[in-house]
Length: 285
Image: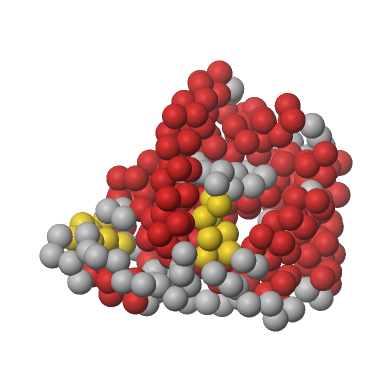
């Protein structure tokens, strides 16, 4: 739940760079362990533009290393934990408006009522959304966006893409993101407020990004498969298989001679540190 909240916030602000790699932690934690290997890459039907995507992935990675990461580290040092948690809660609460709209568009009317109640409680009793009161009352945070709505309407996922700065998406995700950005009130708060949101989201993902860099021998493949699995999980409301079932890519990864196994204990420890540090469940973005 905590990491899901992190991803939701980052998605709502179009922050990916290297940040989208944090999605990996969800799937690895669900599966208990993961194995990667150095092999030649077989063509992937979901990623017909892999050569270009890898170039964009490398660009985003360097942009994060030289700009976003250093700035976020300074931000972490000068911003108290309670302030970072409050900022996370604030932007997460604003995104609830998107969630309510997409609830209705997907005919999830009961959930729409619940999410509306969550927004109203956090906006009033939660001091404008800086305190997540609603979760303590049993109103859990749901993740609904226009990409999911398009999927419900029967629009196919389309090819996997890595865009400069924005990061991982799909052909269906591009109009979905455009709609969500337009519907999110935080879009209209001005550049200084947006910058705070970007910094806070990048700081939130620090531990997860460190994990993917250290654990994956091919971070690109891991990020791609994790992203697609995560989106599938959202579209099916968690009914898709909660495992690292990467199909051909997993076979590809396991076929090499050099392998690295990541024990679930160390993974859960990394995730636990993120959850404690960010207090995301008390606020994934």
